Image (cartoon, rainbow over all chains, first blue to last red; front, side, top):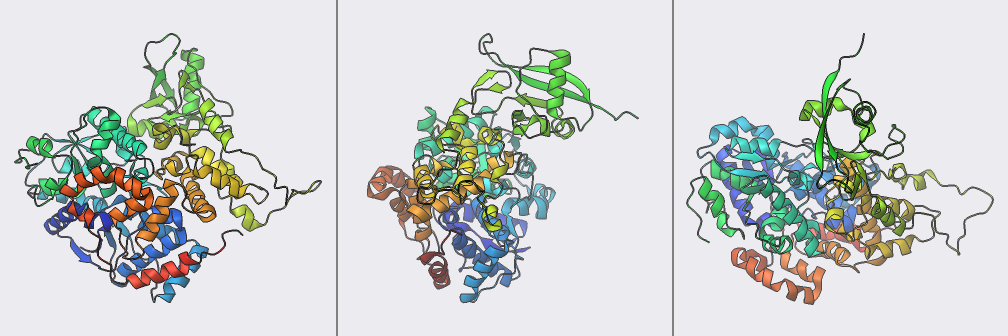
Amino acid sequence: MRLAYYPGCVAQESGKELDMATRWVAKKVGLELVGFPNFSCCGSGFVDEANSTLNTAMNARNLAIAEKAGLDILTVCSTCTGMLSLANHQLKDPKVRARVDGALSQIGVAYSGKTRVKHLLEVLTKEIGTERIRALVTRPLKGLKVGAFYGCHLLRPSAELGSESAEEPHSFEDLIAALGAEPVMYRGRVMCCGFPILFVKEATANRIAATQIQDAKAHGAHAMATPCPLCHISLDSFQNKAEKQAGHDLDMPIFHLPQLVGLALGATPEELGLPRHMVATDSALARIGQVAVPA
Amino acid sequence: MPEATVTANFDVYRYDPATDAAPRYQRYTLQLAPHTPVLTGLLRIRDELDPTLTLRYSCRSAICGSCAMLVNSKSRLACQTPVGPEIEQHGRIVIDPMRNLPVLRDLVVEMTTFWSKYSRIEPHLIDDPAHPMPVGRETTMSPAQVERFKETPRCIACGACYSACPAVEADAEFPGPMALAKLYRFVVDPRDGARRERLVKIQTEGLWLCLRCHLCTEACPKDVQPSQRIRDLKEMAVAVQGGTEPGSRHAIGFKDNIRSTGTLNEMKLVRQTSGLLGMVAQAPQGIKLSRKKPEILHAPKKIEGQEELEKLYELLDDAPPKEEP
């Protein structure tokens, strides 16, 4: 399967390990990732708040790039998925469509609305299929309890996305089970990570992250996994600050979705960029009999 | 022929702070037709099995908004939620009071905070002395003006969104989705004379604490879509006042940040949102992060076709159209 790979800003910068893991897994499962050096940032929800028409036009340009190549878009970020899908949704409004088309025509771009936006989670579980992934597992993650953390924009608003139930999704848990790990069910799995206000009111954002991590922990999770690098920033990069809000250590390893898949399919921790995390993943790796990563 | 029934096991939250040391769940079992509303089940429990069960309800028709509660952890109107699908999916029906509000008894919560946050947005028309409303005749609106209200007039103030909101849970300053959706309704009302003042005020009163997680929109039994209207309020606030608060500075900063390269410069964004002092405050965390993630110190490279993006900014951002109809 060929897809237009839209890594998003974070996976190309501070979250480069997500890109490393995605490429490793794609190769293993037979996904051909076609890169486009002209893709721009999705606006991350912030540009939408400042100027929604500009945001829609920017993303229509991204969607048009894939459409021209006859490809659907593969995302590895819940927020990119949400923003690109939002643009597809907004463009159904004739007034928005007219303004955006007018601007796009001035840069020689046309978008008819055909590009579908698919997150890696959807591609792995629905298109490649959980059973096929299970068959590729060489190192089952037995003994590891994992709390899936979906990230808001993969699920909601359901009217704009709708690849699965917004309130009771299960594809991520299905995937975790196929990898040999034990999925943990907890309320926080569909909640917010706090990221959108991390730079607006940090303590509140950290408190929200702490709440979800504590919830996963209380339900027995040894680790959490997320399909969104922004959730990863909030849950991993700022876990030290979440601990301050919680008033105690959290020590929760946070995996990017393809890192967890990669581990089960035989990748080394280094190939998946695990040493780049702020919270060491050693405790989780020890449970699945992997050599611990040096700090 | 009588309709087939299913066994409905209700596990209902019971708590009387005056007499109970801790909340508990009590099991009640009824035979119910699958389409029976959860509220009807609860009222049968109260009337036939246990007169001490305390709950709030009135119209039973999803109009009054009294019976919002958690049904299998989801914020719902009990009168609008049939038992069948809940039993099918969860095997039982777990009932809790709404979240984010203190419990008075069983399923009844104390809603004073909810209502006082609503009062704070001044949910009434404010006359503009320069353009007073006509006396003795109706004020008419054009279809385009009516359309701007979107779905907000449908709100029945049931509190389901407030119960589902993680920003309410984490920060007392956040007004909550219902109050903000109501604020939107007055901001777009052509009869209201305080549009600008309302937008300026809310910038400092919690507007930017919305996480845009859209949990409110999923919870709303009336499809009011509070999260989308909060988004609209943010855009209108930016248009009337610019970046005066960390939230609006962050939104504008982000927009300007990606213009020159097409991709995000993480370091620069911190400076745009927090200023130089904020940069200093963030420095220790930045240094820690940069040891594992050195990329955050480097400016990202320009995308190909950045000039196309630049043109979109020129067309759609440098001279935005007047947003008033």
